[in-house]
Length: 94
Image (cartoon, rainbow, N blue to C red):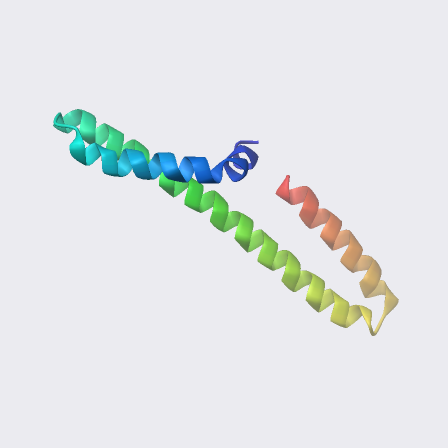
């Protein structure tokens, strides 16, 4: 659920993370600036991780589809298996 929210608002979170990370340079208090900087970089890291995971699962799904399409041309059992695997991948994403 958190990942879906991050995927939905990733542009906003990216902007907030950048503003916090670089905005900390202009805060005169060292302790507060380190906390703000750490928070900004944490938001950037979490957003990058979720986006990377999403891209990896999409690429894996495309690869599985293409390989199973090649096998499905030879045998009908592979076509049925491909459909089950795609349904399983879509269930994992949620």
